[in-house]
Image 1: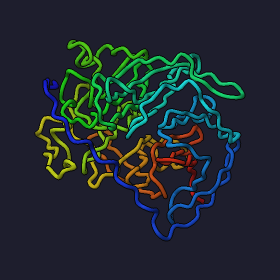
Image 2: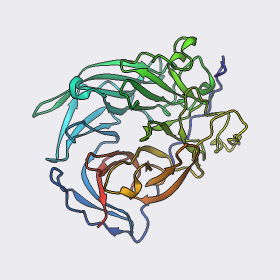
Image 3: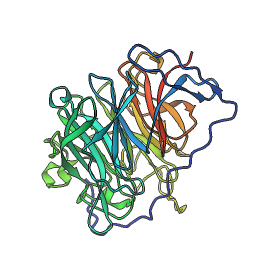
Image 4: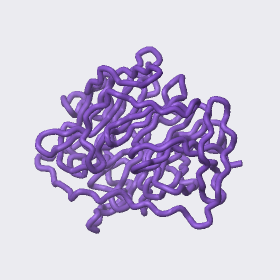
Amino acid sequence: MRKSILTATLFPAALALASCSAAQDGETSAESTPAPSGVMAGEAVSLEAGSPFAAASMGNFDSPWAIAFEPGTGRIFITEKGGTAKLFDPATGRTLAVAGMPQVAAQGQGGLGDIAFAPDYATSGMIYLSWAQAAEGDTKRAVAGRGKLVCDNAACRVEGLTEIWRQTLAVSTGGHYSHKFAFAPDGRHLFISSGDRQQGAPAQDNTNNLGTLVRLNLDGTPAQGNPFAAQGAPTNQIWSYGHRNALGLQFDAAGKLWDLEHGPRGGDELNLVEMGANYGWPERSNGDNYNGDPIPDHEPSDGFNQPAISWNPVIAPGDFVFYNGTMWPQWRGQAVIAGLGTTSIIRVATDAAGNSANEQARHVFPKRLRDIAQAPDGALWVIEDGGNGRLLRLTPAS
């Protein structure tokens, strides 16, 4: 059980994500493979020699943060951190503006965040958005909302966007919002990652929901059967805790939930998420504090859940997917990670029990990669981080 901390020790604001490295020397132009019917061809992008990918740029966006495929259409929804969103149609190459976005606190790592289509989107038209919201004074918090996506030939809009969840502590720092979505395979529950907001100690405190993964009903109310339901709000939201900044949240083919999160100076980790489990932050990490002070490493006897794999130096991950397509059949079941700090796609294989994982390969790209999604045809799509970030379609290299 999380221990109550009456006075949280505020950690210094974390440093920015690891700076990107340039693409390696000797890179060669990757020829685009012919686009299948229904996908416009894009401009070829040069990748490192021997890359398994042919990359095509499908357009540029303003600090894109998340991408998601609209069920049944193959269109791609892209959020931009400054508070705007676009809907891109791969069949025509057309990009539509999406109105009805919330007012966001676009500062530091904050702004418009994740996008997810409801499990019953085909009938409800509901989408979910997360964002950084200004609060009292100069404080900010992560929130989530849902509304109905309506499109015509000229534009798209979100109607009736309503806040359904928020972080219970608002703080002045501008990072570690997390606010990523994952729907349970049965379509009945929504998981949201709630970052520690660079505070550390609240992740071990059951009087708030920072540094946690929460499990909600689709309307944002706490789900029945949560491990701390008897303790009342907000603890009744919590599924797991002791997390730092989870920017990846995905279910695998077996229905197991995994999170991918940033450590401090070292200690990025991929975790199998279990009900009621404590993942140790900030008491344990395989990295150290930014000022050089050590943090005790994870140990089997420390009482905390251990990461399946951790990285030191960090990879500074964006999001990830469990690949299940046919374009790279040898990768099926592997975690395919968009890397910010490493400017790469990183492939990781997990064991059946979820106790361990092993990095299989890194595939270097020219720029930082913020998010990744799998298309219905098995292609991978990624967005580059920062201003004028490209939307890239990846297919097998010829």
